Length: 393
Ligand code: P1T
Image 1 (tube, rainbow, N blue to C red):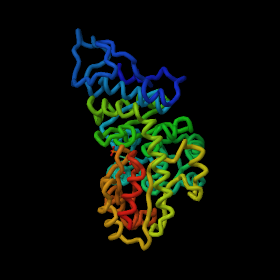
Image 2 (cartoon, helix red, strand yellow):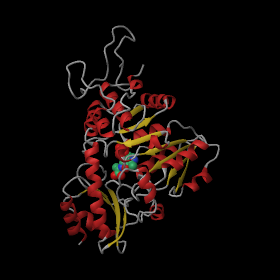
Image 3 (cartoon, helix red, strand yellow):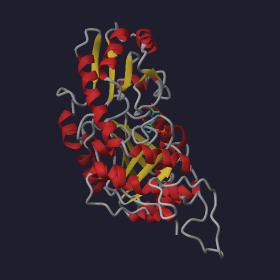
Image 4 (cartoon, helix red, strand yellow):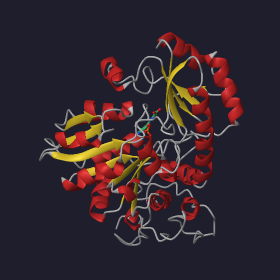
């Protein structure tokens, strides 16, 4: 049996901040008592007779360090099974491999550019049809459902426009039509939002971001409750082979243990930065779900514990050159793709993370040329404000 099938949690009674440290973990390693799970840097496992092994045969189908991570992820998302991959996109790729030609997917229209590229440039070519829909008003979703619809894919908050989608409402629609609901929980993490509890079937993470938390690893994960669905995804994991290595699994496990304290500070700093930007005379608009005038603020309040550290903003005049000048002038914020690490990052979605979406499509969604996205880190917030002050002018 694939050891990953053992990724069940036993700590349902634990509070979240305890689960990030102990959830799904054997407290003491049976070999030498190491407190952290060892990095089992091995491709294969000795057998005494064919099939005579200790639960692991070959590291594509199962590795003890990866299993420890998968159990931890299942625990913190209130799921039953975790399935880890080499990147976030590899995890989404595995979900899409549950489908076949002729199937249809309804996805948020504002989503990570790489996900959009995977959907349109890879899976459309295999005969899967995608509808990209603004889901801020969930009533619109049903218009796109027909007998071929197999999956609804939601990012909330969306990347980079910070739109909030009502997970519970989408789950009700998905259940009514017997369609799977997958939620990309990368921006929020289970510290802020637990989609399985709200009715989603699959939670997906780019653990490269907040779960790893230190910008030193690429990793993706899926978490589900249903064993039949888990078995199908474990099969794709093994059959397609886009797995993460033991060293990377270890790094994310280490990251998880401080997730709650990091997220608390990301949220505090995020609020201070968002409020600073909102009152700045040269800023046109700030996108952050914590503002009361954010279109779905009430839904955010309902389904999120706090509002996170991701913020997008536009400068007045919508100048591409000015946005580039600002991101080039930042000194504490690093100009870089990605998000969710302890260090603050700034990005220019139109030319970086969302360049794979055409300008027409970007403009429709709101990814204008002057849009800047911030991943607010956990530095001293006064230094972050000073940095923004000098860069924006
Ligand atoms: O980079 P990877 O681990 O493959 O994860 C892809 C991914 C999936 N979902 C969301 C919401 C994401 O933000 C990402 C990756 N995003 C960036 C690299 C970025 O800068 O937005």
